Structure formats: structure tokens, C-alpha cells
Length: 256
Image (cartoon, rainbow, N blue to C red; front, top):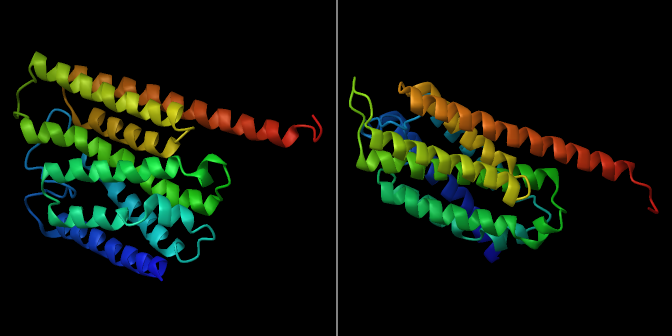
């Protein structure tokens, strides 16, 4: 009975999550159509507006999650790895979605779900079906990558502001380059450490490309371009290695 209530509350939590973000996007002037936390000005690491379209994909995949949970054959991965955490995430998001501290708390909660999913026995034994990958792992991998991006760019929004018509100081350039490096190494970490988590890495490449498009400073722009290309190479390498691995498995002799 507890599992049934968990699934029902997950559905209600999803509509709360979507409703709050949709309201911020459509009606809240302070957020300037950047739902998730309050951005009232641009910074030297702000991405192009189209980057925030990733919210649409996150909401779509989470909708798939709350529907799929009623038909999942392996309920343990939902009740044990995710449990009540998705509900808590949506409540935190709703109670303070304009505050930077909310993103920090949300990041910690989403990270907990992400690591529990990646270390769950069902995943480690590689018995996940395509539907589990699409509707359980993918939503939280993408959300985890995106919320990490928000932590980085939100930190600059909370403590700095881009002066129109002025170039960033040397110190600001150094800080932005370090932030871009953190994003890039995190993306590579998704691939190298978490057994080829391509989804999270793609989110960060998406953000890096948006930063390169939005920023006028040549140093910031070309560093963002370089890191985006470098990370894309790692993604393509992981896809190729996965393809080769599957080909060798299919072609291996039964007794050898």
C-alpha cells in the first residue's frame, strides 16, 4: 500500500514541480524566463536563452517517469533508489524557486538520487531495460547535469553582474575560465567515472555551447568553444566504445 501512495504522490509532485516552473516562466517578471532560481541580471558566464529550453526535456522525461512507475516490472529501483526524494525535491523547488540556496539544496537532493540510481544493484548488474534507462535513469541524469550547471552560473548571478559595454576584468576572466573548466571536467567525469553517462555530459556541452554563443569576450567565448568540442570528443568516443563492445559481445564464440 505504501508503494501505491508513493506513486500517487510522485504524480502530484510532478504537477507541483511543473506548475511552479511554468508560472515562473510565464508570469514572474523577476525570473526573466529563467525558472529554477532568481536571475535578475546577466553575468559573464550566462548562456544564451535557448539553453534553458532543457527544462522542457526534463519535464517531458519526468512525466514519462511518473507514468512508467505504474508499469515498471522492477519496482525496487523506484522505491529504493528514488523513494520519497523526488517529492522532497519538488517541495523544495516550490517553496523557494527564486533563491540560489534552493538550487544548492536541490543539487544535493538530485545528486543523492543520481548516485543511488547509478550504484543500485539492478544497474550495476546491467539488467536495465531500455524503458528503465529512458524513463528512470535519463530524467535524473539530465536533471543532475542541468542542476550542476545552474549551481555554477547561479553563483556568478548571485555575486557578480555583467556591466553593459564593459569588458570583464582579468580576475573575472580567470574565475569564469575556472568555472568552465569545472563544467568540462564534470562532463568528462560523467563519461569516465559513471560508465559512460552520456546524457549528463551532453547537458553540459549544451550549456558550454550556449555560453560561447552568448558571451562577447574572446577569451571566455573561445575557452567555452574549446571545452565544448573537447567534451563532445569524449562523448563520441564513449558512443563508439559502447558500439564496439556490443559488436564484440554479439560476435564472441559461445564457448570462448
